[in-house]
Image (cartoon, rainbow, N blue to C red):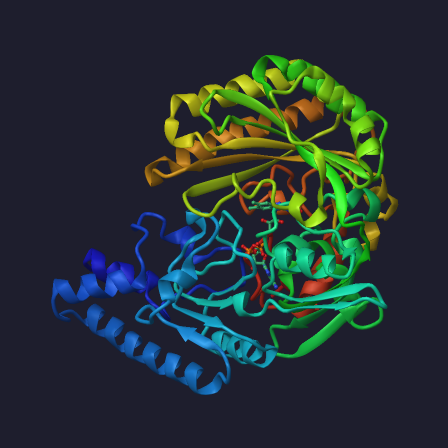
Length: 535
Ligand SMILES: Cc1cc2nc3c(=O)[nH]c(=O)nc-3n(C[C@H](O)[C@H](O)[C@H](O)COP(=O)(O)OP(=O)(O)OC[C@H]3O[C@@H](n4cnc5c(N)ncnc54)[C@H](O)[C@@H]3O)c2cc1C
């Protein structure tokens, strides 16, 4: 079979013969083919000539069948936009925050109501197709994309409703945190959302969700009041503490496993318009002093306060730099005192000031732009961070990115959050397994040369392993059995360095999965294996 036909077999619409009884997907079986779109394959095949062999004949038949399938989908959907490789807008619909997340879907639907999602899910199952759900599209591993299957792209479902009396914010499943922050601010309210406002509410919520308000109010899921979900069987249900409580439990920490969440309702809180926040930048020789201060600040936790330390190249080209984003949900006096130790070190840049809360969640947007290839490797650590270890990581990282200018926009991001509120909730209360005092960080690599994907990811895994062994050394001899130190949303499939990301909650999750998604339709992000009955 020629190369062109082979590609059509595995990737053209309707040929994603993936089914979801395991985590294996077509993308894992066809990595050797160049990353082109179905539209390009079709053009290439047309150019290469006509159909000759029986094999090719079969494929032609399948393609015809596929056209019939697409027509049947079109006939059934009422309000969705339907994009196939030949449609205007198809390629734009494949765009994700990272180019590593782009895959050529067989068909993309952009629904505006749950009924069409239900229809599309049943249609996909009838034809044995792979299914992906796209919220904000920030997965660097492509978990919101499909290689040849159906993508349910929620980007037209973004509306936000604020109930100022109940102090709740309800939002459709395709919204980003920008919509939530801005709608809440109009009523003097806020909830726990992401620190980069273009991330999706969907993926972030379903995996737990940390934000600047976590010190006061816990995780995003700790503030989830209810969710509306389209299940694999096509039904639309509300999950809350009183309706489908087991599903609600599972959604909060393992939520990408059970259905398409079309609506989230969050508890919100009175939020003063202005908070104390901004950026401090330090030259590399100040690293030890900066970490001494970050360690000292976290040693006296304050629920209103948080910080993020970032290793990066200075945007002005002046070389390696250490950036600290500071946050204090209070006055300038209180915040100023809280971060005075850092300010006294003598930063080369200091933008600390009173700013609107919603603006704080834009501070990283200039670095976290769309485009290029990216990898996120989650790391975890328990402060106080060892100064020598921090220095070694910093030097290794700078050597790596200075050795390859294509990596210049990469960063290592380390969070310093007051975890006490998060740890007040028992691990058994939601599916989120990582409620402990480890802090989370990310090795964020950004490059353009596709041929370097493996090399860069392998390097990042090496650094990830160093952080893991640093923590292991530190907790040796302590009773930590069953504790899951890694944050699931920073551990995309293949990047988890813990063997069971669901920890003690796995067994209960398996039971819920068996009820709500027994055939593992929703299998993209840390799929929960359902034990098969012995034959
Ligand atoms: C720049 C950046 C900043 C980040 N900042 C934070 C942060 O401050 N705090 C934090 O906790 N995390 C943060 N993260 C991690 C983030 O939580 C995850 O990347 C999350 O998966 C992104 O969700 P998304 O909807 O944008 O992504 P997608 O790629 O759209 O989705 C990720 C996964 O969730 C599933 N999914 C999404 N929406 C739905 C839905 N409505 N129903 C069912 N399944 C759905 C998708 O199928 C996919 O498997 C950040 C990530 C990035 C890239």
